[in-house]
Length: 95
Image 1 (tube, rainbow, N blue to C red):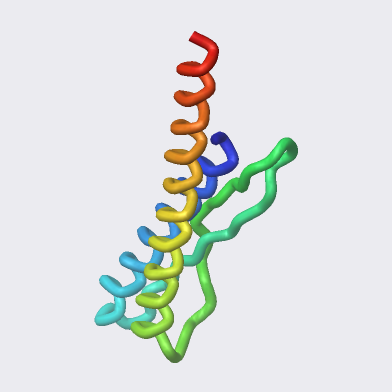
Image 2 (image 1 turned 120 degrees about the vertical axis):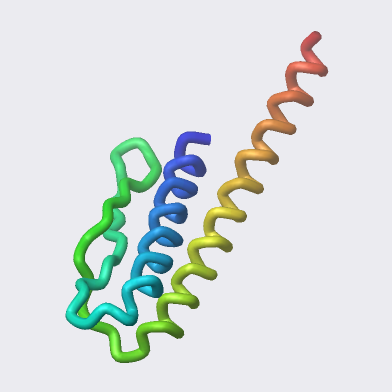
């Protein structure tokens, strides 16, 4: 569950970065934000916001990045729900 929850945190940062980039599109010379992810010993991912390179396809790529992050968040949430259900079934069996 800790691996999935770290994935959810990383996906949440991805949505925040994409939203910030879209919000700053009208501001000239504003820096773009990206998410850097690295694996963690024992499983999971660590994510942080970093300054990104300029992107000529900005609004479309930002919206696609946000959609990708939402799908990643949903997949990790489904994994946590499934794990919780299996644990509940195991406890019911043992009780």
